Length: 120
Image 1: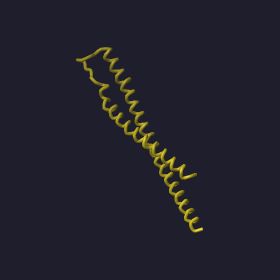
Image 2: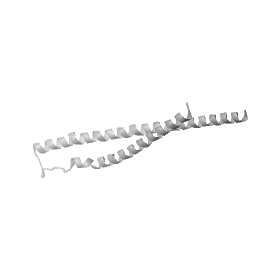
Image 3: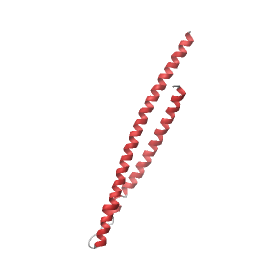
Image 4: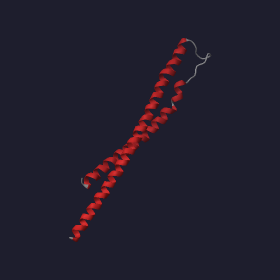
């Protein structure tokens, strides 16, 4: 493969890594905002003095078992997404390192070829 190919591949992988890093940072901000609203799902709390009866019980059930459960599910999905993005970033970083090593080796070979031609 040529140096031109490896430089193009390096640029592509570095751009992919930068996009992932940017997405990761943006997603962290969204997760923080999302987490800050977690307790508002259970607000306001109801007592025997504020609201009681079968409708209050049903509402509490929907709020705790429905909405809050799905909220926790989304938080779990976000954690899995962070893990997947982190793994992909590590993979890209190792690819970039490998490509840079290939480039260095090719440049060394080209320099040696030029030196041999110069002396022949």
